[in-house]
Length: 511
Image 1 (cartoon, rainbow, N blue to C red):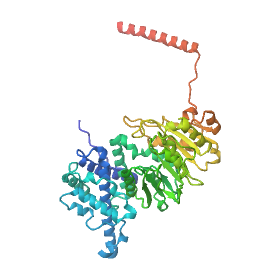
Image 2: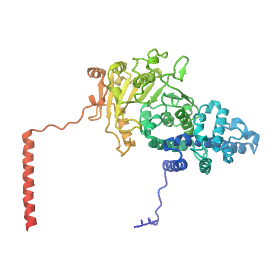
Image 3: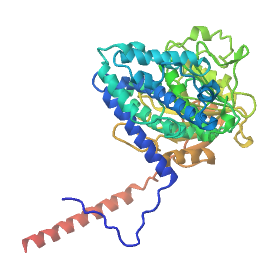
Image 4: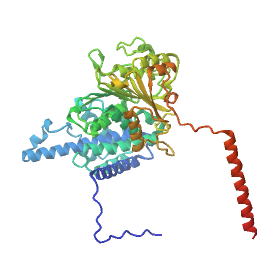
């Protein structure tokens, strides 16, 4: 049956859409446009490789469109003076001759090689801002015509050419939001590999709310993936000018490091420092000869990483083995100690996502955990529910550490059992905004709540052999055990009521 059209009643006027609704609709529209670009690649390119193509070409198109906008603005300002409009100071990025998007669009063959060549020259022309960004993507993928024909690349170029992707059409926050949705789609498609570059944004939002970075404070993620935690920090600080130069990250995977830089750029961050390299073996963000210090340190490192470099760590020149050296089969406590060493003196704080095994595993990890507890840096331990993260069957938790805990938190740790605070979905559970608010409230209240949280002393933790699992401390509601005779009496009465009802029923149907 066809749906009836809604009548416009006299005097009825639809409520105007809010600015946030319009922004969400625009971001969804842009996401749909970008995802259609993915569909052009579908077939010859597997879906878990989409990001290796869409990310750099989106970035290249936006750079070109922003350049054109800047050119137009400079021409208007100068009354049409082309020499003035071409000056480097009028543009955020320099695009060498023959390397603009429109130049590649005019090519008729070898389009993959043309795109790669143009992106490489743009990167070389902008060493301070684009070094190691565009060249990190495989030129072989773009130039292998057995995978991607000129026809497919032409379709992709023409599709992206139907829209201006500059700042005037799509401000940085809108472009960034649409790209974040696209990254989530890439994560949904690639599953097992997704944990390398994508942390559920609800978890990121919760951790940033707890750390509450302020404009002017430095933020560091030593395993930054696609940059989601750093971007959320910039959002939290409302893109304040003081964010410039205060965002730092390191990422081992070369493509993910490039994506992090692009992602920050697409979100409007203008001055940040993302380094590529193995943080545990070779930290790149240093102060003099030591580890750099930051106000907020946040990360979701790879869970239970093996062969992470314990031999080098045992005599680490940066002194990061604060409490000991974990075995080479599991680097969880190496990440934690690196992050602790990266905390600045004073009011610095830290949030780290980990598998729940770090809360109770024994041997060297148990000895390290004991020293960590005794340091009185831990403010809260929060366990999360299953199936929230991509690519791992391990149940997650997170720790909040502070250099200067509030006086009333000194010698205490808040234990939160958040395993039941989630919204169940068929394939992947999520933390809804309501779930995030509930967990945040439990943290800020910092008090005992039956079934959910318990504030415990370090002495109580010592009595449980330094086990940090919240379910060892939280008090759970228990129904009182009723006397046997009372329950038996109720059962007999219920059984008699059933018998009487059955007799009445028989009388009714036989009448």
